[in-house]
Image (cartoon, rainbow, N blue to C red; front, top):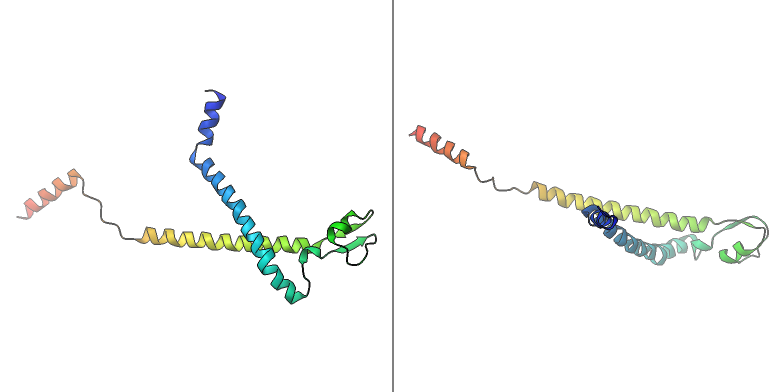
Length: 142
């Protein structure tokens, strides 16, 4: 089998295509969750805590950085060690929300599957052998 045919057979398997679609949708969904965290949740949390933006929260462990310097500018200062805990908090909240949303989606999908499985189905049509046996049984009853 040639390399191209083998690759085509591999790429066209259902699992590979499903995985590719899942990755693409997941990337888009990640952007939506990022926006929810950065644009909706973080401003509320920051209003309660009193900081306008978590990503600007950091501590200088070694070196000197003028007060009010942005994180990006503080990282550019030579011989400084920066502990950027605010960015970590933002990413952590992002992850927790994403995990929660995925959990709720999977839970909903499982509930729908359970309802589908619980639906009563019509009994299957009897086979020819079963029909003949029923005729014989009915004939013996007479």
